[in-house]
Image (cartoon, rainbow, N blue to C red; front, side):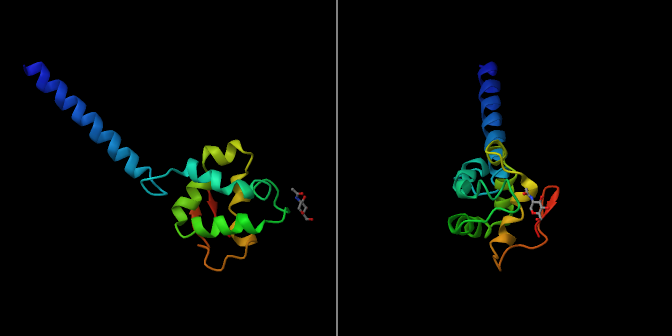
Length: 116
Ligand SMILES: *[C@@H]1O[C@H](CO)[C@@H](O)[C@H](O)[C@H]1NC(C)=O
């Protein structure tokens, strides 16, 4: 009996910890992840690899949307999905500026990078 109680407590603890870690990792909210959101920036692929590439309208529209939540935007730009698609985070953080998004969070720290 006592073993069962311990087991139930252990399960409850594990569930609590995993729920807590999912919430704290939710830069983009509870229902999505930065890696998921990174797929929305597919139109930004070339602009995130070449600082001189022109940034497409659809890319800017997505960046503007994500930029309403700067910590999410940063998490997306630094995500493994973005890196695996060839994005250079240092170049990616310049996209909001290249889109001339007036409401972009200038000076926001994206990991080791600062939004221009
Ligand atoms: C972008 O343009 C600058 C200035 O013309 C040049 O120095 C730089 O090498 C170019 N970068 C790329 C990735 O083509």
